[in-house]
Image (cartoon, rainbow, N blue to C red):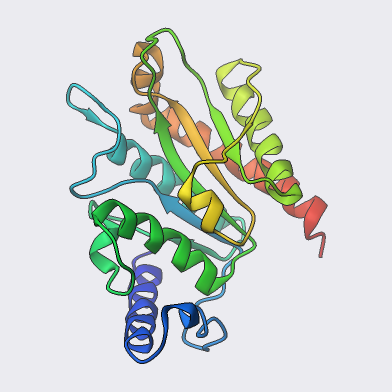
Length: 231
């Protein structure tokens, strides 16, 4: 895993140097560079560093995202997928963004979609934990782009995660989300539960439950690739 992150950072540095010499519209001209890794899947670990994401007492979304994402990464690698995870430690991706304009939050989001558009994987999973003012609201929610492959991926993930929670949630369209709007490959936001719900919060911090979520995600991805990329 650590080798993938080092190689990824090296590739991003090449991209930064290139951007110093060209227009922003040429940002992804290095997509065919042999130094860039090939990937079936990018796991986008939500938040990090100064950006904690949703909070509840001592619990921070960024930590839950990272723990579950790392388990998912390891399981998918074991299955033979080419997987990239965009952070394995607690830091903000905005710190790596030297090429786009805007504030920290905008740079963070641009870095996530920019990475996907450069490497061009077959899908991107953006991993998050939900929050609601209604403390009784719980369970998974998958948010998709307005395109057929993203919709299919969201449906398969939602059904698989629903089985873990014993729920019947439906995936939803994410019109307003930057990462979904600016990522060209099929992408979804996977909300793994609610930090604002006592039951979910306990589960999301439990290693056994985290492993069950990783397994559910990997099973949905197996289904997706069997349908969309059968070879």
